Image (tube, rainbow, N blue to C red):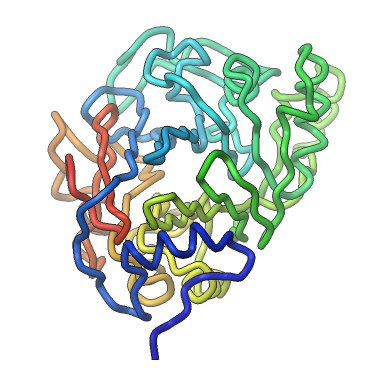
Length: 334
């Protein structure tokens, strides 16, 4: 019997598009399909490489909707020419390397192994500056929305338009892109640098961070049928099997950085091989200079993950736009 890979919560038109694109049965590798593609562009610290603090990705649906995921430190604020139009901003959690406390003063500043993040953007954050500059709603889970609503309002923005709460299993729409929130197993303490001076100093003196609820990940369903699971920072969790069974992702963006923060190459390979089982994977959050001149370093964690995974693992080279069809197959710049 063919697996029903849609939730009734997803709009019927999107579900039909996914059927046409080829949503397979459990463990099945769907055939490559011609037709519209989703463009995925990494925005890292150094053009053509995959560097230690690279997190940010821009997803562009065939209808033109553009979604930024985890801007971090490598997007150089709202004026970064690589951004273009942004229709929504996703944030998995508030750690500084994802929310953005620092940015580069210029393109490719520093070296891949040690980027120059010398421009401080706290207490606002890089993410909030982008949300305000692009007038694009920030989609967050946990209790993060109340913090960001107050932050946006204090900077002259309208939180009713620019901050959108999305907790696990709920979904929202951005253009023709459906966005669902899913669980991640990771702490989510807000660093003191993003708070006012008095509050921040009190927390720092006690060695504490501020509570903003749970970290999370996302599932994006695009109009061509591609379904992408964005893991955020996470450990192995039974929720990843739920993601497979309920949403049926055929592409995974998987954190692989390892000790002491998240799943490493072996653990991440277990997630994609045994729990989620997509057609393709994009490595993320490697915490290493994984490439030199665009070529994968043989002894890198990224290379180890690529070897351990039983499906194609694509390396997100900054500025190099990959294109994926509705079956989760990379068809351009793979």
